[in-house]
Image 1 (cartoon, rainbow, N blue to C red):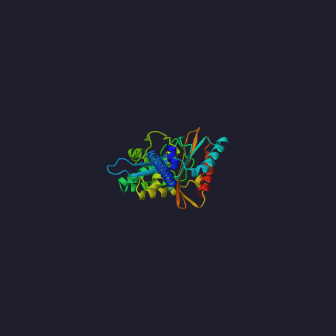
Image 2 (image 1 turned 90 degrees about the horizontal axis):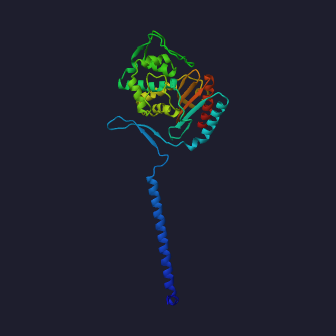
Image 3 (image 1 turned 30 degrees about the vertical axis):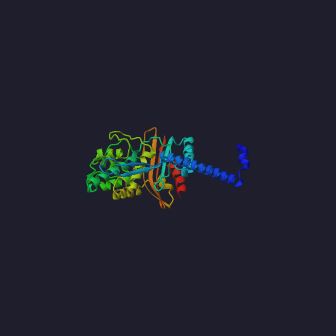
Amino acid sequence: MKRFLIHQMPFYYVFIILITSCGATYFYTTFRNSAQKEVALQSASTEPPMCSMEVKRLKGYKFVKPLMFVDNPCESEHFMSLKDKLSTIIESYKTAGKLQSASLYLKEFGTNDWLCINENEKYSPGSLLKVPELITLLKMNELDPGFLNKRVVYAHPFTSDKTPVFLAKSIKVGQAYSVRELLTYMISYSDNNATQLLNTVLDVKLFKKVFNDFGLAEPNWSANDYPISVRDYSLFIRAIYNASYLSIEDSEYAAELLSKCNFDKGMANVMPSTIKMAHKFGEAGTDKVKQLHETAILYVGEKTYVFTIMTKSDNLSTLPDVIKSLSTEVFKQLN
């Protein structure tokens, strides 16, 4: 009977039924796809991205939390080719028996792009610890204006079981120096005598607080060492450039002192004229394991980077060449 009725149905009725059916199917399919897309977008928005920015803020205040650092937890694809080349250089020195280990950290401030090699290796920072001491002494001046003008007498030589190899200039026994003058000797010339004299006026409690504020383990003042990774150490240099811990004026002053560092056996030895830097080196280690490190703020046109290299070997004399080789490759990329 139904078949008979369909055959008897006028053609335009059949056409209307077909159009209506197709339209309903189209709108249903469109609605379903749209709904599925919306659900997918909502789901994606509720899932945290793998490489979302990590923000570090300073605690201890009632109403504010000053911004310290912003980090992308994922290394930049932009630097992967460079990382491969740097890793090859490190392995070649290790194969030749001239290097036990090396770590490297490079970060562009503007984009947060970064790379790190051998991130988990710990090193003895040596004279690199003079940078957090510099930060502490400048913080003391902020809390007690005029502190940098305080004069201290270098009455007698300090005893030390370490004899620095790279030493340019030192304070003289019997003379008085302002804290500001001693900072120049400590940072620009890496003078251990100036550092030990500054230790006599340093607020040790505040020195430890600096590390806590940076999210690092509190140092033992009586210990001979403070093992630290290349990326963690770079926080001190980053804070100076960001002016995120000290005042802008004191951060500028700290960077100016670093720009006058006279160590020329590493990065400065191969740095092209198109790059300027503020840097500090550190030597450390034992009779069996020698260490040499260098950290810098690199100014390359409109871009700025933090760049830190840490190295270990049984022979200190081979380590400046390692730093120079790695720096040459980095400078080539940045230019």
